[in-house]
Image 1 (cartoon, rainbow, N blue to C red):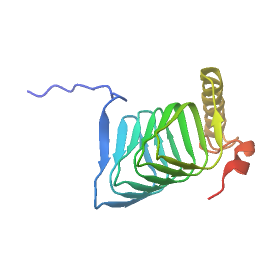
Image 2 (cartoon, rainbow, N blue to C red):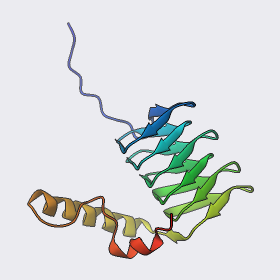
Image 3 (tube, rainbow, N blue to C red):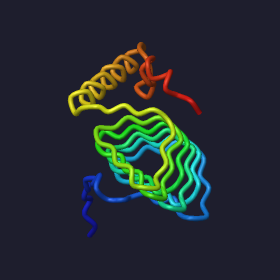
Length: 155
């Protein structure tokens, strides 16, 4: 009667919404898109896109494919693709991205680092190798930032 279909997760679709009036604390990992219109404290790791809406307020380190900031973010942001700070958006923290766009009125306070696609691929391979080492009892956590990135943390 019911067929067990395993659907693929589309990173282009918004799958998770933290709505306005919602306060969330904790770590979010997702393979699909995330949109935050409420308040979030904790890290976000997403293979899809992350959007922080105009009413969104986030105290978090964010790692995602493309990131759009129309709300307020305090923390470090890493986009493997494009980071867009809208006119209503504010980022207080450091950023790493392949492409950066800040609209007039958008606020960015921190340092920036632009990565090429080759650097992003190398970092992904390095994280995979660390993860495999951890699975075998050694090495650092794949979520650990490189030691040189520790100097970038300012909040």
